[in-house]
Image 1 (tube, helix red, strand yellow):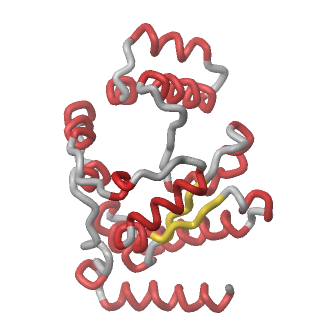
Image 2: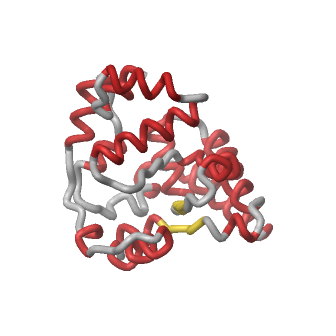
Length: 208
């Protein structure tokens, strides 16, 4: 909580007032992010935790009109990132991937209409087209500058200063849009690991 307050640069009085007014953790998140958005003269805020897909219905209970973007990436590259950054076994990765896909497939037609699948590879290779599609889906005006991100190291520095930890996400944000992580499995995975993910992908495609 201390890191969160410092990261979002909320003064102690306002922080205390937000906590006092909140009925539970979800309500606090809503109040905190709304407070931050208004401070920056923005009308909406975004939260990007990957596991949000597992709680889509709970999210829509609190924010019924919230669109959800579901980012899809080559599973081999996903596991390569997982392996290098999280240092967790392939079984944990496959279980997580299956849970995410199952949660998506369980949505009914009305719920699925609130979800836009976005391919990671398309975003980094055709950012203008993909960002225009995203903006249309969420009801925001598209500006070409959105797809010409050149990098910003402020979040990376802030995470280091406040938490003293290295964030791969913040590090990526410090760089312009790059596609060098496409195909990273070729350098980060063993042949056995590639075979296991590809065999699983074949089974999944067969079920589809």
